[in-house]
Length: 145
Image (cartoon, rainbow, N blue to C red; front, side, top):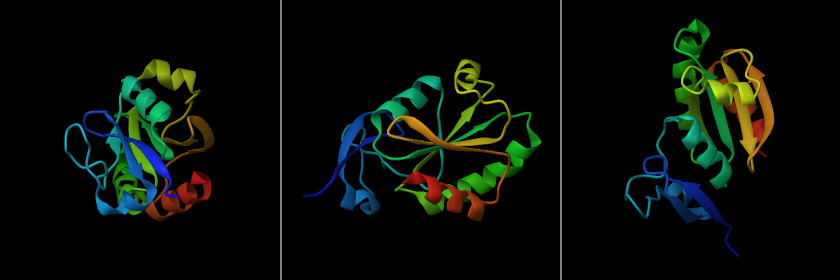
């Protein structure tokens, strides 16, 4: 029997049911008809983060960052390159701690950049500090399950 995944649209946040074997075939959202996967991280505010965390079947790797943080800015293209390698099996997202300070406090984000891996709505691993793309990919695959 084919595993059916629930995938949140990165554009309209609609829920979509997608057979796991079809992830690599560029599925589109049933509501807005746009691609469910792009080769770049999503930019999430607190509400959208919670929706993706709560409703998406895919592992979620989040880069918590801030615009004033030089290591965060240096890691941004590396995280983008990792997204191209890891999708669609792992959803990558960026959350600004400046725009979501309550969320950062709730999740005890004390240093940035901070990578946090979530599976089934729960944190499973975190890594402080900047990393090159190949290291992000290796770390994500190790913790995605």
